[in-house]
Structures are given as C-alpha cells and as structure tokens.
Image (cartoon, rainbow, N blue to C red; front, top):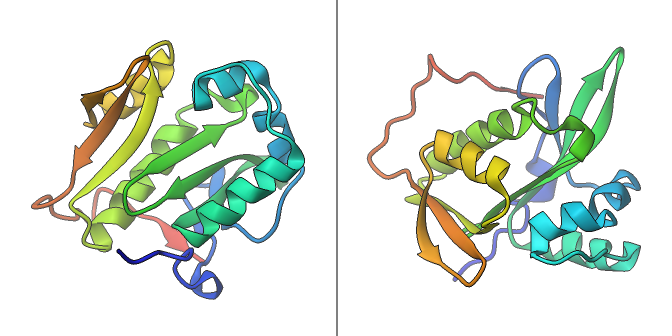
Length: 180
C-alpha cells in the first residue's frame, strides 16, 4: 500500500472553488484550528464524544494526515480578505471535512466536497469513503447523501458512507475549478 504524502506538497497549489471559497495546501499549523478542535460540540460530530484536542494533538493529526493524503485549509472570503474556516483531507481510504460552526449551512462543505469528488476521479479512484458520520450529525448525512454518497457500513453510533466513482465520467462543463 502506498502512502500519499500530500502528493508532493511542493506541487500542490491553491484551488479556487468559487469567488468566495478557496483551498490552501497545508503549510503549517494555523491557530484558527483551535476553534474547531477545541469546541466540545463540534468534536462530538468529529470523534463521537464531547472532548477537545490540545494544540499538540491537532499538530500531530495534521502531520499524520499530511503524510497520508491531500490536506488543505478551507478559506472563505469575508470582504476583501480570506479567512481560514476549516480543513479537508482526502486519503486513499478516507475523506474528512471540518467547517467552523459559524460558516456551516452555507453549502461550503458541499462545494468543497464536489471538488474532491472531481479530484478523486482524476486520480482514477474507484470510490470516496467517509469512515464515520455519527447518527446525530444529520447535516453531514444530508450533505453526503445529496452528493450521492450512501451508507454502507454500520458501527455502534455511526455509519461509513461511500460514493462510487468508477465508470463515472468527468463532466468538464459542469464543474470548473481554478488552480493557481
């Protein structure tokens, strides 16, 4: 099994999803992450229990994710400047996205996930898997099912979701992303 070290970090570029949303390749720890990973309610949706991660735990998680997949920060334009509002990670066998609660319910996660579906298809992947969406996290369930992910593996308090990509052609007209 090969590892995907943010696939040659030096070759990753920023991706503009639209005028308001862009992805920035992971470069270093950003303090904004403390807000998402030190919010017990948010963490319940991420890991299943109300807990918080220390700055060191977040750094370790980012280091591991960066060594095993594509890791980006999600940036949102607020007026004239972009602010970091979340992170997203695509690995061979998992996909994870975290959005600051203040920016949820704006379809940001949906637009970012559409980009990663496109990217996974370009990489020749057969599927994208979300290893765990907790039963109480209805907004995530709704977003992923809207994008044709389906629950396929039940755990105690959650489901794994999957989207098949094989034999689905890239539609150049429908999705346009700018890499810069």
